[in-house]
Length: 254
Image (cartoon, rainbow, N blue to C red):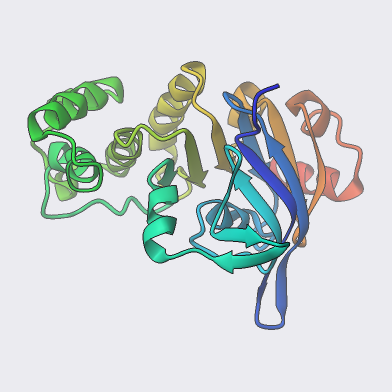
């Protein structure tokens, strides 16, 4: 049996007195797509940020591809790893945020090339070839020399996805990647995400796009109040929810 790509075991996260994650258990197999849905403030984005140690968990264990994230364990005690080690772990995990976070002074091509060259030491010529291929894949080959300010929000988000994929991650995290977009631009970003899923990329997606979750996800997990209320196949969670909280949330959207 293959190692789980994400294995959350009783993951807790507090900010001072505020308990945001309350013992999350979540398993994401390799090559699968898991969508996290739920109201704002339910802990979805915090969980996502814990997966690549942008937030430190307060309790529990969190593994990516069999490796404990953010900590080393010796004799049952957790010791936080160095920032250099954490950066190495993050280099295998792509993340796409709500805001596009592109370098404004670099072209689309340069944005996609940046990390492979400076983080992974890829030869610039090889990085450029890969970047052009990825921009073509997201439908932006013709915008390679454009700066972010010259691109629409949907185009900027597709560059951000190409930039994350350029690091050849084993896992992609998406934090509501379409929430900052005008409605007519949402479809072009979801199309790119569908193609990534079809290629077998393991994805954990925080989204309010219920249609996308129903179509693409292998598993949908509904979060509320820092817990996973229910999870399962989209047809079960979205079309036949068992919990009143899930039903109430979905009825407010659908």
